[in-house]
Amino acid sequence: MKTKDILAKCDHTLLAQTATWEDIKAICDDGMKYKTASVCIPPSFVKRAKEYVGDRLAICTVIGFPNGYNTTAVKVFETKDAILNGADEIDMVINIGELKAGDYSFVEQEIRKIKAVCEDKVLKVIIETCLLTEEEKIKMCEIVTNAGADYIKTSTGFSKSGATFDDIKLFSEHIGANVKIKAAGGISSIEDAEKFVELGASRLGTSRIVKIVKAEENK
Image 1 (cartoon, rainbow, N blue to C red):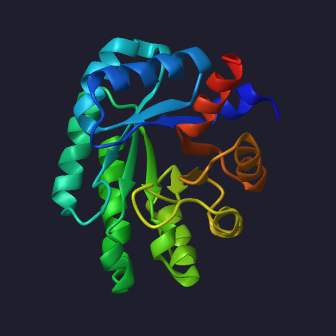
Image 2: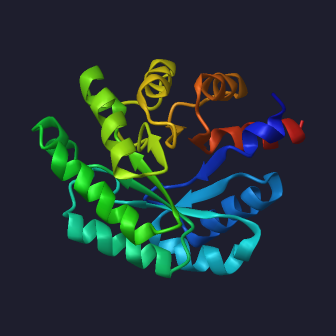
């Protein structure tokens, strides 16, 4: 697989609490230069970033991030605000506690409400795989499919660990035909990225791949 094809699947990501506008602007420049799928940035920077990149690059942001336990009303408001500010894609975190309590209807209805606000914008659902049992991961494949979201996503990158090959394989075996997969966190090499794609990931949440490509160019 060519490096440019991997870059085209990357959501070039910067969600650090210390990120400044200059940092965000720099990853937007990277995203446009290397033609990444999007840049994934904090909500507070969405408006400036969209004004900066225009139609040259998709802007992705996060909702209920990173813990997922905001109320549904807050998540819906966050989503509306992000889209109003120019977000093209939304990555939401589920309420993990409700999933573990077995309130599957709550989790599904929350995703449905956010998807309704997104309309034609892409919605990715972060389930934080490192905190779930295999049974819960399989259940989330069913819920995400039924709720009409566009992607199931492994991780926030702010918990115990990120994507694993086993999780992507599991997703591939259990998601519906209309749901894609995003592997996020723990993607440390071009080889890892290729393997995730081979296993079924359509998107990769990482900043590492662009950094590797830039380092190679600077040698």
